[in-house]
Image 1: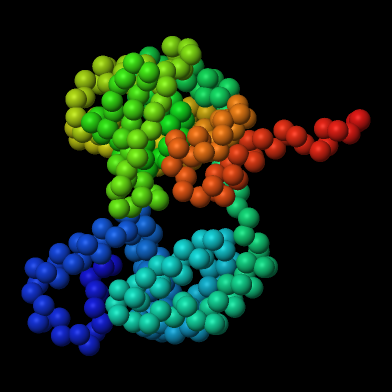
Image 2 (image 1 turned 180 degrees about the vertical axis):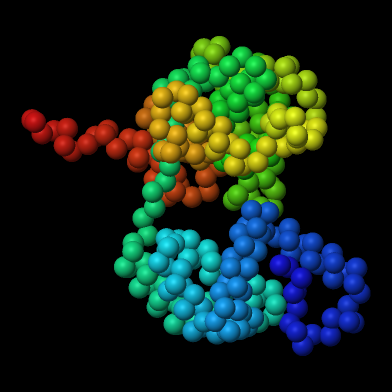
Length: 320
């Protein structure tokens, strides 16, 4: 996907091949692996769509992109269509072509699409403290159960994205008398890897303490370095890191065991749950953001408002 780094009329033969290879590596590093996968999948779909209609994909005309948008709008939400446009635009820029996305026809069609379909989303539900307690109580006392307990409690109490959780290495953990200090080396909003450190205090109860759960997992697994949360099936190679999708599956599987509807929850329910539950407990937004790493208080405030929607509710004043 990132092979076309320069315009086609640039004499690339004058540029040493090793420098071009290193340049491609830097281009790949400018985006997360998940973003690159999305872009690659979208570009394959767009190219196939163009081929079927004998239209040029590179460079594409604004009219071609408009046709693609209209057809995708029948099955995709406006936000997802917007991601498709980002991929198409990026591919044109990498190839040295002018993007057909940043044009008036495309802008007007997208504006109409948003007005017609709306832009609201249906995010997965936030996990509450009571949910977490029920879920971890169902986990067996075997290696998988011990891993999953540590993963759920650390992810929830750390307000972590699933990508942050699976990216943790053993070396990112530091146990202190007050609790656990975690070094998050890189995240969705920190692609340059400035990093941040968060503190997870010891829990009030042994069975739901994230610090004890992490220590127990390290002791049982015997891992001393490398990925913190590993696959535990016989087909997995030694020290194979879990994927972000695995976090969602663990959340859903454990939710089902606890009698909850698994379709309502996903990996993001841990992060969303921490923010809403902390808000319910009276934590200040700045303190919640210090843990979650939210750079936008507007986004965080959406979580907080969802968690406190019944507090100071005007309807409570009514005698009904």
